Amino acid sequence: MRSVKEYLPTVESITVFTPEEIEKFKEECFRTWSNGARIYQQVGAYILMLNTGLRTGEMLGALNSDVDLENKVLHIRQGVKEVRRRDGAQFTSGKEIKIGKLKSASSKRDVPLNATAIAMIEDLRKEFYFGPDAPLVCDENGDYTRPVNFRKRYYRILIAAGIERKGLHSLRHTFATNLVNGTKQADGSIKALSPRQVADLLGHSTSQITEQYYVKKDTTRLIGATDEFEL
Image (cartoon, rainbow, N blue to C red; front, side, top):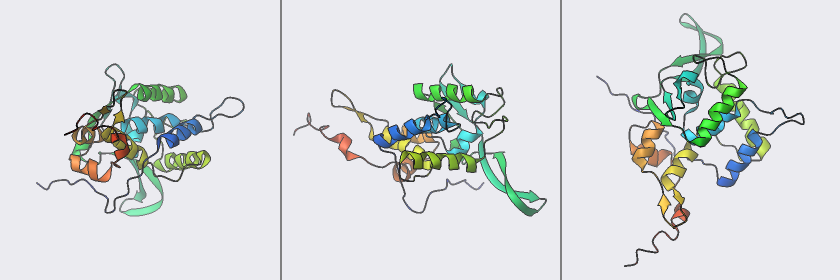
C-alpha cells in the first residue's frame, strides 16, 4: 500500500502577523458603516483561523454540527476546494465547489477552541445560521462559501488596514509561530507548546514539518530567560 505524503512547499516562505498588525487587522474586520452595519461579511472566520490554525479549506468545510461548544472543540472532518467544472471527461468554463477528503490522514482531528474562537463561532452564527447541517461559514443562502470570494474579501481587509499583502496561510503560520515561540510571563518564564503539540493541532504528520515550514523563530521572546541559569 502506497503511503500518502503530505505536500511540502519547495521554498520556505513563512509569513506572520506582528502583534500590531493583528490589532489593525481585527479593527478593520469589524469596522462598520455609519448606520452600524458591518462593512465585511464572515470576518469571524478569519479571527477563528488565527486562533485555531485551520486551513482555508477546513474552515469553509466545517459544518455547524462539527462544533462542540460544550467540550470546546471543532471536529475537522472534510474540506472545501474549487475545481474546474466538467461535463463528463471534458472541462467546461467556470469553477465549482467540491466537498471532499482532507489534505492528509492526520488532518482529521479535533481542534480545541479558546474563548476568542468560541466568540467568533457565535458571531458567525448571528450573521448566518441555517441549521446544524449547514456550513458554519456560509453565504446568505446557507451554501458553502467559495474560497475565491473568501480570499478576495481577506485581501480587501488587508489593503484597507494598511497591512502588507500576506496569504491566508499566514493566519495559520501566525498561530503556529505564537504557540511554539511562546509568550513571556510576568515571572519571566516562557509559556509555549512543543512542536509536536502544535503539529497535532495543525494536523501535521510530523513536528519537523511544523518547525521547518510553519514557525518563524523569534528569539527576542527569550531575552532574560537564562537569568536564573548562570554557570
